[in-house]
Length: 341
Image (cartoon, rainbow, N blue to C red; front, side):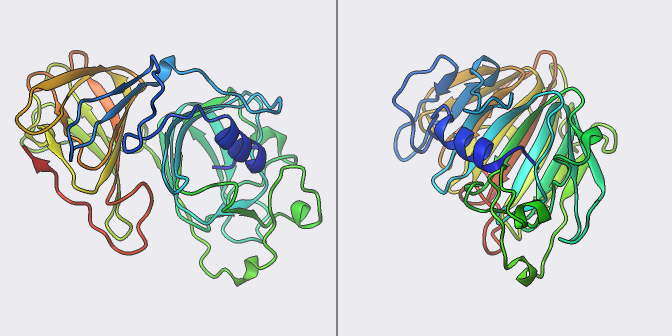
């Protein structure tokens, strides 16, 4: 995504203002009312549940009006956040990242100018709205609306769930002429060797509400799916699930664990009951999820849906899975099948 001042918001807000929640692999020792760790006995790991609606919004040090909630921070500077964009916010200068990022627009609107190559002044206009999903590969140019296209500013503000798979302040660069000529108020770094890049990429953007209907899952009454990304070449998968009210729990969501895959779940709407346990054969604990609940499921953590009707009102959730770690793999790495108990 194109954000105001990568150095200010991504650097300062992400590093200095992140609320410091550790991943389940490296759990924090500070008790937080909005955080739950599931039971776990070695070699198994706990799931981590956040009630993100109850988390405080952290604001940048500068008075930009932007805010953030940090849900996950990985060992290689991966960072999953909810970004709060104020009404009237503009984007960034034309820039790219040397890493993959993905995002889901929870509410509101935010605009990007999607450029094909560095010398393009106006690329396709993309105004992200609720339900838009983005998968942006490395070297995908975006931004360019800041300071010269006021009508592209956010109309009502936005809430964006976004995962950046490396340190954005260290691996983001601009090709914008303003920055190239020394106007660096945004903190963008200019790459003088950008012409050596031969693989300018384009993102995958899906309007999941208007352009992609639910697909019933064969053999699982009441379960529906939207397959957003299935990319074994990079060990990455993204799906949206819809479990209808009081539908029987699908067999595919019975308790299981991954040996090395890392999974993130975010409830977009409704209620969902999940179960976890410290080890196979031990008693299960139930966690009731609601709108904007977040569940991190690291390797060796046991989780499944509640065994009867897991949702009373119906639930929609986004599920993102990495084959290993929390970033695109460097070589083809298929995501393993779950190990069912």
